[in-house]
Image (tube, rainbow, N blue to C red; front, side, top):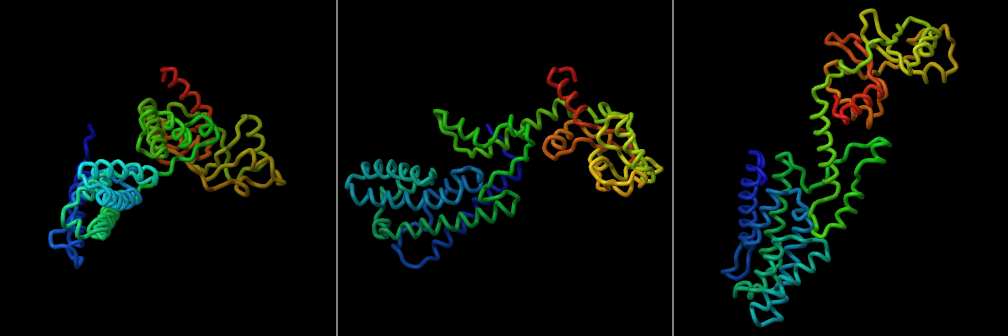
Length: 345
């Protein structure tokens, strides 16, 4: 059973309180109508549960709420007008309303209650006739929706719900990972339909993968796997010197450090060998100064998104004083991931 946190409890309870109060007060202020006509209808209670307690549900989105309630009310009134027997009108009204909602993509459980209420119309609803769809049903529904938009967004929950954008995957991850179309195809094969968006499932799966990776690797710091024998150059050294180091050490990137071993730039094999440059020029003339470094106590798990989705291949590692302590490459990351998969990390 789901346990709700305090903010969720407050949003659900107080949001429903405010929504029902404002929706009822607004409908009561609408002039005209029979004296005994309710200013708020019972299905709005169920509607409030969805809008404020589970606003991310596909059943709680604006079209299902608005279309489900209003269309079902119209269907229920139609059944009441056609069938003299209340039981027959109720059964046909609810069944037909569900079918119409499914066809129009606006399935909303309180819509079934709206159909039942209209099909078993009281004298006041009978007197109101088709206008019952507008007042109080439409007034209640629209106001409740507006309050839900305000309460959810002001309390930090996006409504209408849009799935969080999935972390962009690199080519390998995209080829092997789960995508929204994969989930949608799998959902089609289920005998029991899941009322959840495929994109939300992808987000949950990727978050679970990240959590599992943190559990397996979170305690391993980068310092344990980094290469400490790092070839470096200084900004005043010649490009010839940098080229020689790249070839001798068989590396693709050289950190550029100052006199205190702080990283002030990097030069790569592309910088050094794909430009028409004079070898006597100094490194600072071609180095890139926008450098991403990581502390040596960074968990290894944090490297995975950097090197799989953000495109980093080599990252300088620095100590507490910001001095170069080592270098981490995709090779070291792959090695530790392999050991983790084998259970030897």
